[in-house]
Image (cartoon, one colour):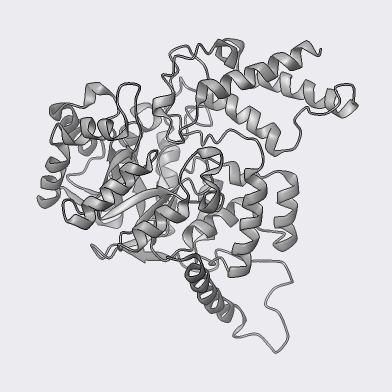
Length: 466
């Protein structure tokens, strides 16, 4: 879809919403005080899958960052266990409030996500939700036909079901030191005949929709869509990264593929898009103060995350937008955002593109905290290091400028103390030996060792100034 046509569709949807808000009000009397927006005053927005007629909630529940018994997630407490009671409560609330798309994978939560998801969902009628999981055969030990089949069968067992509604080839487009992106794709899905086997499982009713999640080399994305055009394989859906920062700016510094390209290629083929990373790993919910100020001037009561979720849900051919909701308050807030969706208007779209331009100029590491790079063979906590660094950049509190200035010394102290507090010494960037084990697993194609060395050099510079 051309950007101009995209904006026209936004305008039409927004106009319809405006009519609903003002229809029953006295002449010249606003429904709410200026600048105050009430979201969550209606029913969940649904989209229809043209392939199956599934009526899917616009908000999808991503089971990637489940709560653990010690609080937080496994990233915060790696030796803890999933808090099953809390997961059950959150699933109950989600289903009760219209969320019916549940997404998991064999590798999520150190392999515990499918099991916890299965327990939570088994307490509800199977027809009351759509279940998505993935063939996460990343490791060479899982490339054999037998191992990949066993992974699929184990997913059904853990999820306590005899079929899956949406099955994805997980994270296609990556590479390894030994294989380029096409060689890796062939090793995972073609040389072992697994893709053809999955097509057979779909014909047998054990998979209702077959698709893939895309990260990495756009050559693989284009190749799979060409196969779709040729009738070689039919993709019922495709999962892509889409947010307002990546719509036009994902290619900055030579990294990523613009969301606009990915979405438009799917739309012109009539392939529904499932959206991941609407918050760009949470970074769009933690905007720097100067950007938050602009957002609050427009809508004082609207959280930054809501702008991003509204944007991701607005395009017509988006089937559902995934969110990894650890805490109940996140679940409640996101349900409000889509109950119903308040589509982004053309004016708001223009505003968000200006916000995106400001955001991408910040020299952050484009890490989404997916944890695919973990565990590091040398114990380095890669996501935590990047998160600490990015926080100081986006908050505008990096120690820069005159080292003798009071503000610089204050920021320098906070950066170093926070670094030691958040990342124990033995897990800091200084221990990176550049083995590149992490690089081949990064869906954002970050040169992780280079970034770790850059951050370590910065830390050492700050220490020397002391």
